[in-house]
Amino acid sequence: MDMTACPYATYCTAEGCPELTHIFCDNDLYAYAHLDGIRFAREETLGTGGTKCDFWLKRD
Image (cartoon, rainbow, N blue to C red; front, side, top):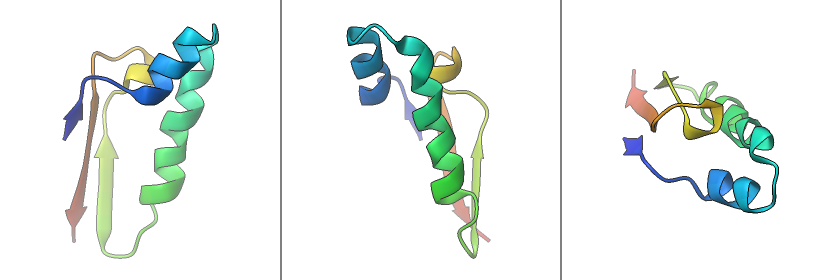
């Protein structure tokens, strides 16, 4: 799934702290990377300067 808009990026930018957006991106790793039987991958995020959030979940 490719996300081209992010509510976290929008909110952090509106509040004047876009540099904090990556914290929300990091939470994906904690939430999805250790699920049994699921692989999580992502190469870029809007919060880290990418043009999209390109993440996917796949059953092993």
